[in-house]
Image (cartoon, rainbow, N blue to C red; front, side, top):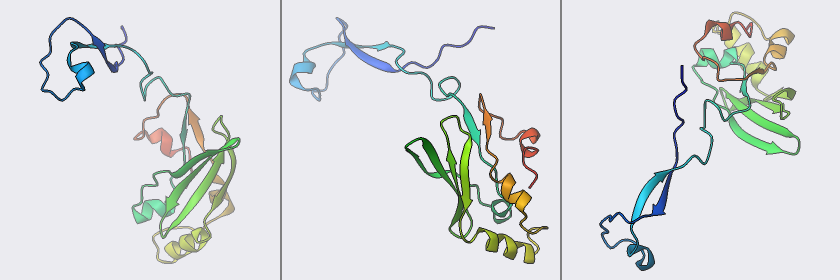
Length: 160
């Protein structure tokens, strides 16, 4: 099956075809005629231009509070990529990754353990925060292509 042509950016080039002007062009350009030409200048943003995808875990405290942790405070500094994922009550998990998207280190906000404990006491969570769960939240999974976010296989990557 042939692959479809990728979208192409639009570039203006001079031509002999007349396009009426409304007088909004600068005088030097207004006297020229223009046509649209499609050229491939950049790879598409998704589906071919990426080197890899990193999938961060979804903490159970986010699930029970209805928070989708959209990565924030993304920065590249020195030899690492730093990404913060928010948790309820102004908390978060900060991940430091190398350029191959492997975890160098991760850390929780100061209120993470207390929030987890409170949600367990309120019976919104059915377990206490364990070292195994904390370690699981440090697991970042790499993919060569964008994963299907609705796949049941993704849910099996993390126990909690």
